Length: 123
Image 1 (cartoon, one colour):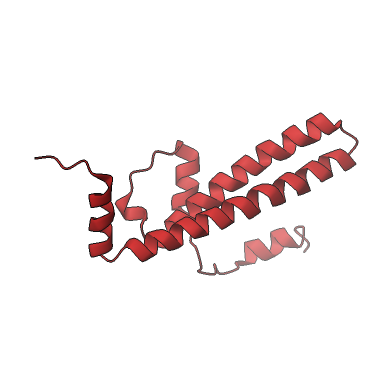
Image 2 (tube, rainbow, N blue to C red):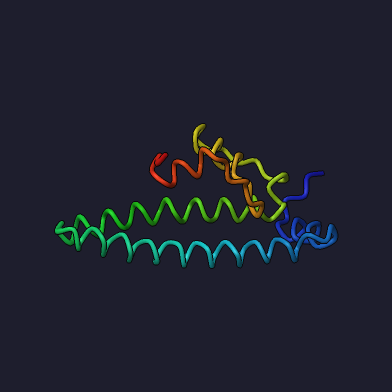
């Protein structure tokens, strides 16, 4: 018989020892979304407004930038949590490739080509 009680699902998570991880993930995602959204909204909106555009355009530009930052920060928080493998998430192809190729917490070596690019291809 199929048990569709949502509390039994929480009990299964608790018995598996994942409840604390899921709660930490929820808090982490909430903080990342809040700070990322409003920080980007304010900064992008102020930058566009300072560039001489109308307040409505600045607000819309800040809002769309903030939505992208919020989605990315939440997705990266989920990926970093280790609970990613238990989830089935559908992403646009290029965005999904970028997220899969994101190596969190591991510094990448700086190549000579990177150094030349940073210096503006100076000899």
